[in-house]
Image (cartoon, rainbow, N blue to C red; front, side):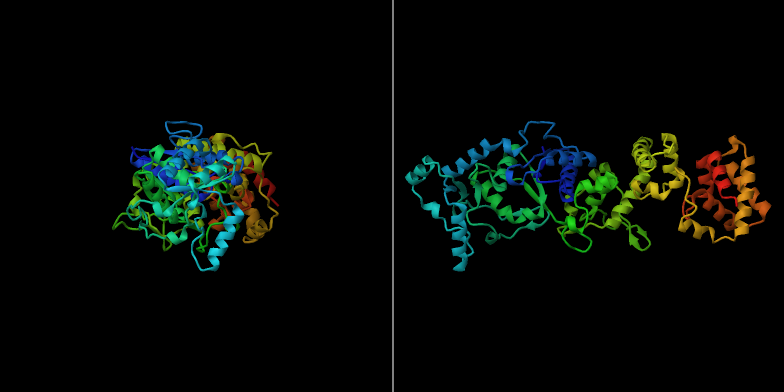
Length: 501
């Protein structure tokens, strides 16, 4: 069975890069009817941040990426915290010692720094001179008995021959051992493993068939394959994912913008849009010969749900080029996913619950927060909502009386001569007041507005601009008829009366 793992370290909040890795684990495993694991790589106590695991789980849940095995779920491959698997790493370290693929190193940090400096001064690229490799068994045993701390290092020169490293995205990898430390440390002096040992042991013991991880681990691939060879184990297939970049090509960082999943949750982005955005970054998903949709001369990104992404995902179409995360694409996708939700009753109800909280917070005294009313507002604004958090600024007039004294409102009113404005408001007030409650609908309101125009013998602008000003105090918005219908007779007449001068 295809089995993958998402293995973050609990060193802080879940980042977009981590979410993208989890997403591709999810898509690939589900497409091949396999499963994926959440494994917490918590072997570095110095970098552990309390609450990180819960943050990772919350981010995955928000995105709809439900792992099959892991913390809170269990499964046949546990425990799923590396800190609970220390005996296993010691067992495998001892195997390396027994086969002479590794040795104990008793050098202190100060000694190691001095050795590295000496090697550098003589022009050597080595980082260690293998002092402890030559210790006799009696000397090693004596030092252990005396309680001297030690690490376990891989003996590079004893590694069995193996195939040239290959990656599912980057292809054949050129060996670059100069970038690796001499005889890398596998087990630290506190008996905790380094990432290299722990990941190889866990992936092999859990039966992982494919490893999706970030491009930053590509230089370590030869070392990991060396370990598999030393243990006489078959390695999984590796796919290293290119880094995500800012629009200017720089590396993603908090200083340059939002990088944590929490940022996108707080700013109201739809999880489906963020997932869609991450999936399309670096993925040539269009079929050969398929026409690219265009909008204002620019290509329009495809809008996919998670289920559709699972069906369409092809590992072979992942590029090894680093992907640019364009905020403009996210805005487009977010708008489209909101549209999709509005057209699906169950998703519309969930959207309404989010909007209710937003409106209640923005307008504490507002009484217009029933599910039916909010659903009508959202539907009316379907083509205008880019982010659900924008709703209070996009159309506040649906919830509170407009501010007719604002600079924008005064400027809008000034586009129509005062006598025309006054006549339009007065006549509209008279005609709409005569409209029966049962006729306060699209057709009835259209007839009433047409009657007002006929009476005044005015242009559409001479009537609609004053009405829009009186009802919303905003230049842009849905049609006046829709606004009238949604505001209702009582609020409409009240606003018109307040604008009669």
